[in-house]
Amino acid sequence: MEPLIDFSYLQELSDGDHKYLYELLDIFLSTTPEGLVKLEQLIKGTDDWDAIYKQAHFLKSSVGIVKIRELHPQLQRIEQLGRAQQSKDEMLQLIDTVMATFNEAHPILISERDKHKAAAGIAEE
Image (cartoon, rainbow, N blue to C red; front, side, top):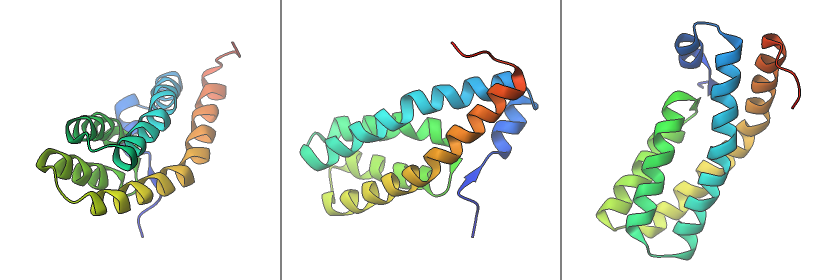
């Protein structure tokens, strides 16, 4: 089975620069959890297909960089379903899986971000 998080693309992008890795992960962690909650609320609480597809599209670009197992294809599928205005049941299953996977990855992402923060010598604010 593939690892939960694949940091190889981030390593490649940053060329091993700890400060850059810290900043990328910090931005990801400051926007993605909130964005996923918003997507979940849209799917579970509305029939706003346009907002669902746009939110999934927005999140998809972030998880294309921070590669968390299966998140990109699942968000892509939610985006497709939202655009086609179909299969709320499939969306509900997908968002539950997306949230569970992200919740499993979240502490690992925080640890990785903090590791790069320390390695870059970034002081507490």
